[in-house]
Image (tube, rainbow, N blue to C red):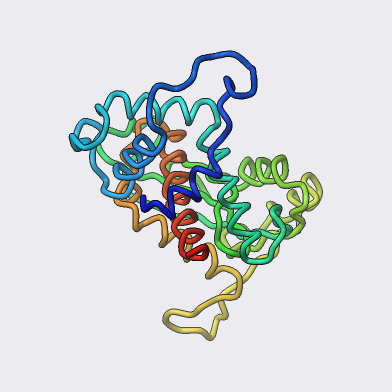
Length: 253
């Protein structure tokens, strides 16, 4: 990270429990070094044991990444950065509309077939700026509408102001009625015209498709290398934190 980007990340860091008088001891590592190391792994697609000697030992970096994932600190950092970006764009911190889509990708041999099959699929919901709201990873043979139910439930639990979600034709059918009755969400299907040929930019859907292309810039996300779906979801959060902190640093310059 540049100094300007670190200033953005530092202001968005979760407050440690010991600083709030909730017990524990001060951390004995540099947050900037640890975050830089994890971001290097996500961006470069390396293995944990291939961590360059410039960073702390790989097992310490892995322990930091694991603790931040399990304690919810990564999600907190991600959500704070998203709020900063939305405010910088003149929007409220909490969105009122979203877009849902899914992306298939090859699973590495190290990924258990019981959880991924031969391929994996990540399902995402983003706001109107393309910023991530929720993500889940499943086997590729899980239909989009089947994965969308639990995903939309998580969306409703975390973002009470959202009333409208755009989706493609793969989410049509009973899911639309279920979302309206159970979650009070309007699921609007954006369909491709039968007369269209070749690549066509579709209203609203292009936003989430752009986000999926952003994720593919991180080499760790080009394939599913993670043994646990939750770890892959954490890698998606790390990728988005890089995008948002860099955007904020450029705007402040």
